[in-house]
Structure formats: structure tokens, C-alpha cells
Image 1 (tube, helix red, strand yellow):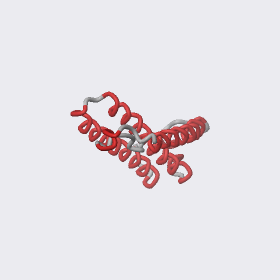
Image 2 (tube, rainbow, N blue to C red):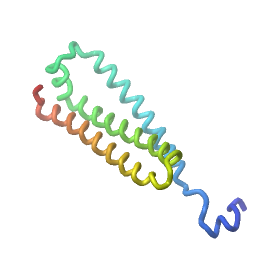
Image 3 (cartoon, helix red, strand yellow):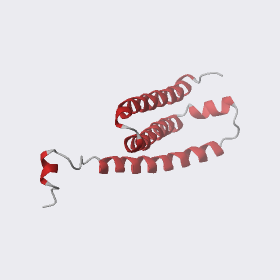
Image 4 (cartoon, rainbow, N blue to C red):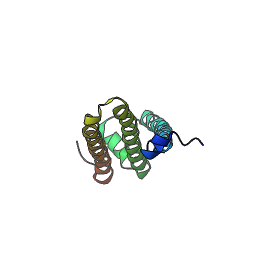
Amino acid sequence: MGNGTSIGRVRALGSAHEGTHHWWHQRLTAAANLFLMTWFLISIARLPGYDWTTVSGWMQSAWVAIPMILLIASVFYHARLGLQVLIEDYAHSENRYVLMILLNAFVIVGAAIGIFSVLSIAFTGASA
């Protein structure tokens, strides 16, 4: 049994089976953020100075640029997942679609700017 009420089956109401997937993505990105932010803070703390030449020289290493790109992507995706839950739970139905479009646009543009900045420094050593 356990299939809900007969009217619920007729109307196709019930679980969309998306909650577990969303929950796992939130947990995985949280773990990735914890690991990558720890790496980032330790790496920054170990720099001999914080002037432009030191930091951009540090950023030109592939061992730094790749984790930075992963950190940016993970943070923006994790933020999107969390804000999606807020929008779905608290926004009125007529505003949800607009808010989700704005959220997705913000995440894509923000992550693209961050990744472009890292790649710009890593490949060209962009000057101040």
C-alpha cells in the first residue's frame, strides 16, 4: 500500500523524488567548500606577502588556479541550491519563476566573472 489516496494517484500528486538528489548535492558541495576553503586559507596564510606581485605569482601556478576555480564553482553552486530552497518554500507561486531565473542568472554571471578572473591572472599574469 502506501501509494497515497486514490484521488492523489489520479491527480499525480505526491513525491517528485527530487529531494534526495538536492539534499546530496547540498552536502557534497558543503564538504567540498569546507575542504577547499581550508586549503585557501592555509595557502593565503603561508604567502610571504600580500602585494599584487606575490599574490598574482602565486595564482599563476596550476596547483593554485585549479582549486580556486573549483572553489568558485562549488561556492556558487552551493549558494544556488540553498537559495533555491528559500525561493521554493517562501516565494509566492507567481514570483517563483522570475526569482529562479534571476537566481540562475546571478550564479552563472558571478561564477563566470570569478573563473575568468582566475584564468586571466593564471595565464597572463594580469597587471594591476
